[in-house]
Amino acid sequence: MSSIKNITMETPRLLIRLPQADDVKAILKICSSDHVLRYNVMDKVSADELIRRYEMQPADHWTFHLINKASNEVIGAIFIEPDMLRYKVRSVSISYYLDEAKTQNGYMCEALNEVISYIFTVLKMDIVSSRVFSPNIASIHLLKKLGFQHEGTLRHAVCGYGDIIYDDLLFSLLKSEFDKAEKR
Image 1 (tube, rainbow, N blue to C red):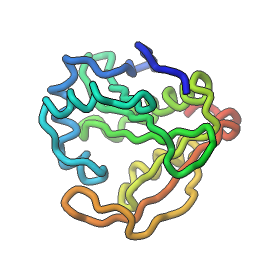
Image 2 (tube, rainbow, N blue to C red):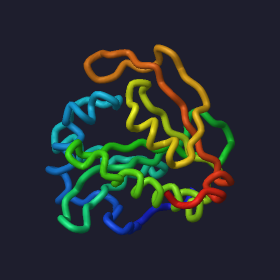
Image 3 (spheres, helix red, strand yellow):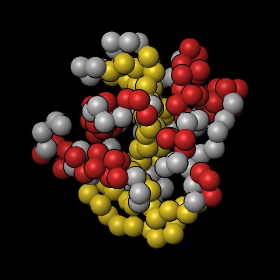
Image 4 (spheres, rainbow, N blue to C red):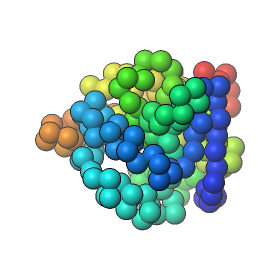
């Protein structure tokens, strides 16, 4: 995979960039919220732990923060990591979260469309996957809107925040499918 250095992507309303020290307070508030935790496999972390995770991130894992250009505030994050379900295929998996106050405004669709384009054109991947807990209807609709196909469901698969066990829905998008679709 290509190395990501100081890449910044831009959409009409967002800057999508690597984390910066000034982001910690805002991103910590977002990722520690019940809204984000309920559909993610993560626990609340301290600011020091968050910084440590960013500093110790493996070379094939990337984090991007979403910055609202109008307000200059951090509103969410997108993560790219190896797709552990595929073997010897140029593939990555994405995950993401957004500040609850910013949901249902198209920000994540806008950001993911740009990041997925980057994954296919610059990183030269052939497929992008994403996994979603079954009750996360908003994320399911978002992935479908972006052209992802539901590949299947792992039943009773993930023990999430609050020790709730979820079915895990698997989605993927081939480069050829992305190339055919208009930007959403």
